[in-house]
Amino acid sequence: MDPRLTEDKNKKLIEIKKTANLGGGQKRIESQHAKGKFTARERISMLLDENSFEETDSLVTHRSNEFGLDNQKFLGDAVVTGFGLINDRLVFVYAQDFTVLGGSLSEAVSEKICKIMDLAIQNGAPIIGLIDSGGARIQEGIDSLSGYAKIFQRNVIASGVIPQISVMMGPAAGGATYSPALTDFIFMVEGTGQMYITGPDVIRAVTSEEISHEDLGGSHMHTQLSGVAHFSFQDEEITLQKVRQILEYIPQNNMEEPLVSENVEIQPSEMLNEIIPDNPNEPYDMLSIINEIIDEDSIFQVHENFAKNIIVGFSRIAGQSIGIIAQQPEHLAGSLDVDASIKAARFVRFCDAFNIPLITFIDVPGFLPGVEQEKSGIIRHGAKLIYAYAEATVPKISILTRKAYGGSYIVMSSKNLNGDMNLAWPTGEIAVMGAEGAVNIIHKKDVTESKSPSDLKKELISDYEDKFMNPYVAASRGLIDDVILPSDTRNKIIKSLQMLQNKRQNFPPKKHGTMPL
Ligand code: HXC
Image 1 (cartoon, rainbow, N blue to C red):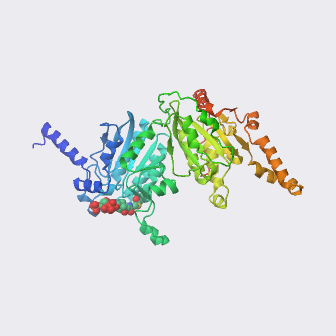
Image 2: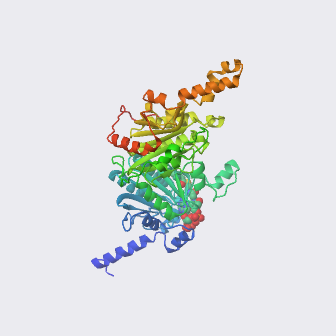
Image 3: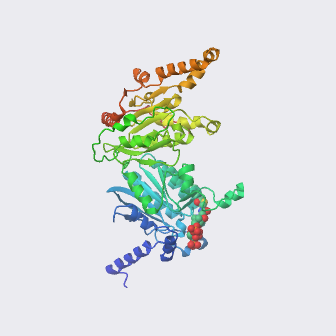
């Protein structure tokens, strides 16, 4: 082969690209498959529209010659980067390649990731990271650590500008978990996705707690207990399909509106008029109400298995993307606790950053009482939700189905937190607290001194209920804009969204607020 001839040069390029495509080589690809995992390139092709991937930096290699790395220079190093399409819309993507030195992060890997993040930010399109990595490349020391810092810095610059999604498809240990943690949504593959700060050996040495590597930081822990991750699905293919799906609800960047899909006419749901139980303490499924109002099968729940007393998720109404926040009376009577407050506050802020209107369904008896909640800082965390709603300038519509008591009435998108359209069903009750609790406090003396305390108490409770346990007092003060028949809810939301479509609201300029984190 004469390397000066054009044909030979082209052949050489094809050979180089072939080698680059093999990442860490055939043997390591097989060992990746044996672990039940796909390779970085296979994952990218499952994620993107067919044949839409354009790879960048496939010829980059690391520059370290320490600890035997001079003999392990793989083309592309341990990450595959590039851009492509999801449902015909541009996205940027990086996929860590575990077949190359365990997907570990070298200086060169971090430079590739930063480059693709910069392109995503400058071109206003989502960035998706497929994570499968042993963390900082141990042989590179500080160069690797500073590489992480460069990525974190970009995560923060991109926050609220473009959607950022992380998909955990293998290990993520130590500080390496923090780039995903800085992104908007974390998806985990059940069984293989793993996130932890300290490994089993360190935990054992410091706390004497025994934990196996398999049990540490998996999808169960993070989607149900810690709330670190938002979604988990049973395998890589389904997880990547779900990433495609969530993007349908979200605009490309903060300067765009979400896509509007076809408006399908739906008949008003008469069953809503009978769905609230007569007994105020009887639970019901708020999701079944929501499903009668939104476009068919359009709910995409976020954090579905974490803090189940509140439902948050994307949906559509008349084809328009909306963010739903709703109490779930089937769990903890729909009360607000620490986890529910944080879950909802974060979702409200995401929707506000990306121009997605907020629809809030309210049935909240109050903040969850208890010493544990107080110790965990329910005051500080509850304040986050107030802050998030008060700060949000997207259209805010609320529907009161039953209770809105005390501070929790105020929190949930109330009129004086700049709620745009506050609607109530006839079953709505707005009060400082439940009738019995109220009578116990304000009529304590009357009842104890009465000849027939229980009769008097009953009478006083009924008086209080007549006066306050309805939506009409609030409506008479304009704090509820209208009391509506439940079957009219869909229609009222659609009309309100149309009215609010050009909403503009500005607050005084500032560097940033000091949210109670
Ligand atoms: C260099 C690494 C590596 C790393 C794995 N490898 N992690 N090389 N730096 N961090 C290499 C292994 O030597 C091995 O090479 C190949 O990748 C595959 O690894 P295995 O151990 O064979 O795979 P597996 O059994 O699946 O275990 C995966 C693993 C384990 C759980 C991730 O490799 C592991 O514990 N790695 C170290 C994790 C870690 O402590 N990282 C540093 C975290 S601190 P060969 O050639 O033998 O196949 C950190 C700080 C970041 O990341 C701070 C940011 C602010």
